[in-house]
Length: 468
Image (cartoon, rainbow, N blue to C red):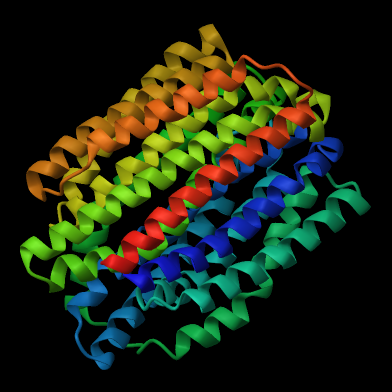
């Protein structure tokens, strides 16, 4: 268990540093990128997420679960070798496909030029495919330090390139995408050398069949997850404009810091969860998993509360006034992302019993609900329509995932304590909202309160972990 927390904090550093750096750079981006340019940058991020799914076809996700079915090093190398061959084939095939049908692809965001924006985003996604196997390998083997070192190196290089192109050369959104693309290209030799040591190149149809059996049901799931998180951007671009997309994207960039805390958790928790679920007796493993789920739900609640509590005063001090409009959207978006992260715990329960088809069905259903609500609300309510749609969809997803997962693989949740913590946060938030000081004084007081809460939680968790 101590290894889980050690890895979580190491992964947290790997995720927190890029996000802290991105947050610190928001004043710079708000100065050198107007909302329209920010909208272009965001639209290409959406594109990058879509084609990353195409390039991998979800086969990389099978590593997290299926590698435990191969007991010796030779069989694991053969398994990873087949993963590598599939990744190279699919990514190269779809790379050619996207460029041949560029006119059709350009319809996704018709107000954005294919060259250079689409080209940079597509190539960046293609180059990043070569890092999938090494990164996941380090995660499942709980080599958090190596994984984090790679993440930090990529962040430092990409940030330096982006600042050079955006600030020094004034390239705007094009400079941001160019910096990301060059960074991914520079890491290809390192990732290839790392991958070669871990694989055996030999096609094994039985392994390929197992990979597809696990991964293919995840493809609709991955696209549905994309719809849940990104379709609102496309609808805003179609029904509003790129500037409004930029405002909304700026708000989601702040609120989505929750997802990066979540990614740190799940990177550390995935191998721990499957190891405990597959190797220990029923009573002991359920007790352990229940305790860890509770701890991390509390962590997500604290992260969401802190972000909502301090974001307004902080952003009013540091960002360009062109983006002030985005501040009002952050609280509800943050709540939506917290709910989404908690729902991810139910996914682990379903994956443990290999119910990927059930996860797929439930996620597709949620995505349809999200897409329909976006279509209905955005034309009428504008950006706020997308905000309400996110809250409704993520809440719906959590409810159906939770109840279904509990039926298939029951884990006790300490809901009474969780509700009590929620009530405490609400009281602190509304009580402090009564007092009106300057933004700087408000910010300092709020940061002090958040720091005190964090100290008490760490002290409690540390003592609890030691006792276990």
